[in-house]
Image (cartoon, rainbow, N blue to C red; front, side, top):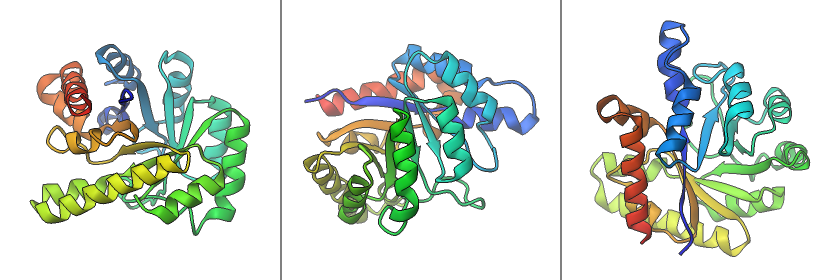
Length: 246
């Protein structure tokens, strides 16, 4: 079975920094610690309102990271221009609403095809690997492939929320939906990633899906780091992922 990569999202290190308007904690330091702890890549979302990651963070990460940077971005001309300048390894296109606390669902690759297609072409032309953050749905997978995106990231938020609510039946149904989407996505030539809401308690069933090549996890790891430290939180997640994959 192929190795399962771990991408660590460092957005909420920047959230803590920005709460006081100072220079610490430094997201770059967190990124380097994550790499040392076994992360295969770093994810950072530059939101329109700059509520956590800032432009200077992206510049610094692009310049200094030794592992791949996954730049999460809304489908806007501003973000396309920043991505083309920063040249991250990958760009994950996500939906973004100013009032949401976090990304609440997948982007509509079906309904927004005409708007997204030139953006995907621009990014791909700059040798930036494009990923579409989508719901685990066949129509969205087909649309992502039609757009020319080589990668999809399946939104696992609904699965996670069902587990948090204690609804085991719904959790199992939504897990099966992710499994089916991963298998279908791989069958049509897409590289399949997954993320959102993953914790120590719910990661193993997702990590065990053989077609998934990468998990992107952030909020839980940063929260857990308050209690055990960032290195320990990442190493524990890495261990659980490896156990599930074995």
